[in-house]
Length: 98
Image 1 (cartoon, rainbow, N blue to C red):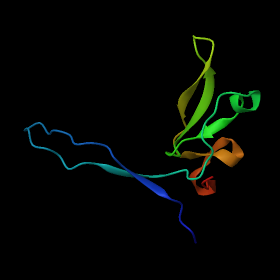
Image 2: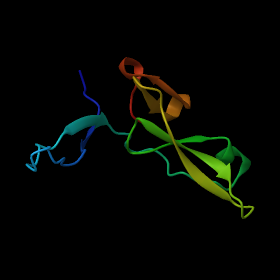
Image 3: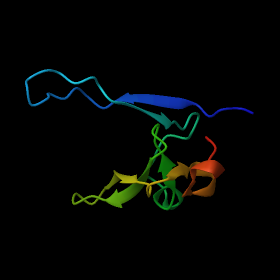
């Protein structure tokens, strides 16, 4: 069984009420590797959802106030991960990297 690549994220230090520092909390998240970079130029690009390194999020092209296009970061629903090949957030058990 092949495990997907993982991204370890430090969520930060927190101060306790007595001024001491709490132990940092870590979380492990699957990462998308070898996915295409987001592009917002052609009509096809504008209708594509793009992967981010953190598989719990994805990118969508949106119109900018300037008349051009910009990228917008969107979260997947809890318990799902973005899969570029399916252009959707899928259940974690069905997810695979790009």
